[in-house]
Length: 322
Length: 268
Image 1 (cartoon, one colour):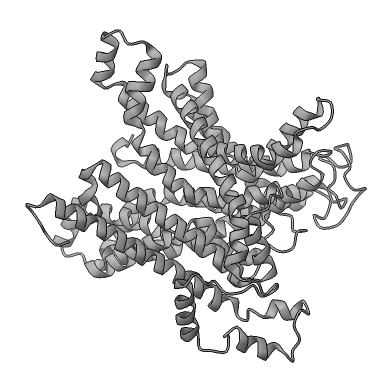
Image 2: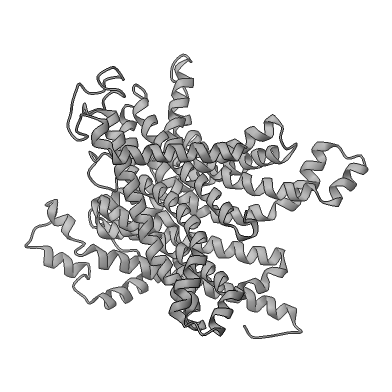
């Protein structure tokens, strides 16, 4: 980095622009890796179409030219990059519809699930984390700690199945199956996914709280006669929150993987199910588009969290160098 | 005391799974792929854990599944550990710019979530169990490069390295007699974590149906198959799902225990 020893504001600008540049380069590596992983490994992308009898040997050459697959790989790559910059992700091999259009149709459903899961995860995580840190060794703390361990250890697929069983057992005792569909469509999938992401959040809050509870200002607050609950939520919890913010950004990656599984378990429409079905069908433009979108979103949130953390705590500016 | 109970029960479960997978043909008289009774029989004297939707013995499929899931996860993890460890050594012992290039590239790859990276590779190679093993293995590489590099860097900065060099030890001698043995204990505990991750990734991908043939006796695929008759016969899904969860938890606990044991600042 160019040294500006006496000008802290320049150093901040340089550090932030370095992160932005780094983010752009990472995005480029991601896109390139996805492109070549699909092309080199796939062999012939039309093979699966041929084997299903959707195209014949006569017009395979024609389709190949239509899709630009007869060009050398490098030319294909350049074309792919330039159309990507224009927001064009190509066309589905099966329906011939634009991939970006197909993705945007499924996007709201996945975002709805991911955001509700994140909200539930944060609320659950804060409740479990504070319970575990407050009054160590009490029954509540032990229970909360095993709950957060369980949330981290249970695979999302299994939690989902247990969730379905639990709800059907719960509703089985009630007259009629009223409300089952709304519970099954959003509340249950979001809770399952939220429970899984509550595990790491609870861990971070617990360790942050355990550290800040021992700080002198908590003792000072106690000496001033501030009651236990207020002391916990206002004085001790606040300093423990910043790491949760950066963890939440990192959860974006986890949540995407999780939505794939949750959507399959609950037969809920969305990008995850679209991704799985396009992988199984061999519809590579759709799979490619979803993977690129998810990876770019993740890179973006990751670097945004990095910059945010730096704005909050300027000491982190130099950490990148090490 | 509490942690000792956890470690012992983890070891107990893992050795049971390993024994079951080695002795699978001796523990059952059925074939995991052939129907042996009526479909969806509940547990009884003849079929200990009942039969699945196609009349295959659930106990048989579970122990053959242990064999397949465990060996597949270990193969994936070995792939990540060998490639990642190798690149890590190169990165740690190369000139500065090579090191930076390797690290930058693995950090960029790390920015694609692991499960997603594996899915790209499955999309490229086409569904199948071998593909899934390879995809999980490769997607674990960038993370392990970073871990092994930092372990080697840390070990290399120790005093005895300098001493050995001063006494005239060449690079190969130092790597063979000083770097590897001292880094090994730490590498081992991280490898355990890698196996737990591979196990979770693998069963997730097979659960999603990316391993192709659904009749394969494999825990993830069995969990998926159990969904069909979930409400009436929940034991099918609970058995395979529970086995997956217990195995991941046990490997993970063992990893934590190993890392505590091998932590040089806490040596007994």
